[in-house]
Length: 349
Image 1: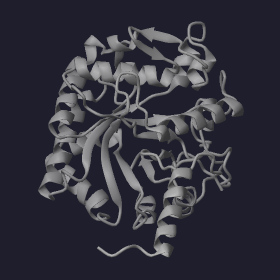
Image 2: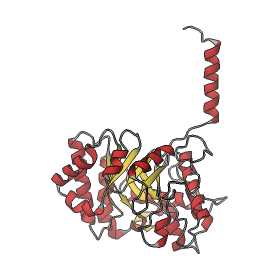
Image 3: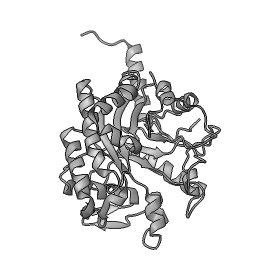
Image 4: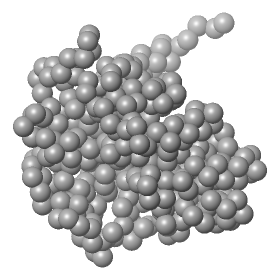
């Protein structure tokens, strides 16, 4: 082995020094791209905005063709949704194969698909029996294309399925929805997928402001607020996520990963919906995701998370639903967020 020249030694030393000063973290922050507005930028301009701001993960609620074309060759990881309105047809195997061909295979591998979300917040009593058959059919179609190990099939749930939620270690799905959720969790476990969960501390707070402090919901509490045995919870996000972990375990899912497929805070239009609260929550959550520290129940495990949403959407109701955007429709950021986790404190341009 030859000795390194002084110049090479100096280069390696400087590279190591730069790495020490600019640590990278494990989990980039994703963003949900909702399109329910009549004043929003084009799909091409929006994906360009994702790239300009180092947003490397996106959730699409439906397979919008213009958005998918704009995502070609960007490397951005994609969750693409099967809308609830399509579940009945996708429950037919041939329709599932056609859906996959038209909305995934026609774009792959130029588009970096990560998950197919079959349904979003489906109410078990209203179409719940269609979700698992549709998931299985999409999975079988992926397997036929030999992509079942590359692209995972899941569904997105909300917290109305949770029955017991306190303390977090007692988290459990409601008894009347176990017929729905338990087989889904079994399917996700058997296919090495993950459960998608929409988690909003905002709704928990406005639903119970007497018992939940604003600082706990905004991730700003200076000390532990809730003790669950030896586990201390300093913020509500961790507590809710651990409730989901516990519920998944009780439904036979073991250590099944959970992806936070939506989370955010409105900047106007409702109780505690202010610009400052939205900025505080979203920047704190993004920092927490980048730190990759996990939760009290699952410490040290990164939490893949998608902030809701890219833009304010003026065609949604009620009023606060119009104001979850991280960007204004003119493409200007409401506030600075480090999405990529490249260097703490980086400004969003």
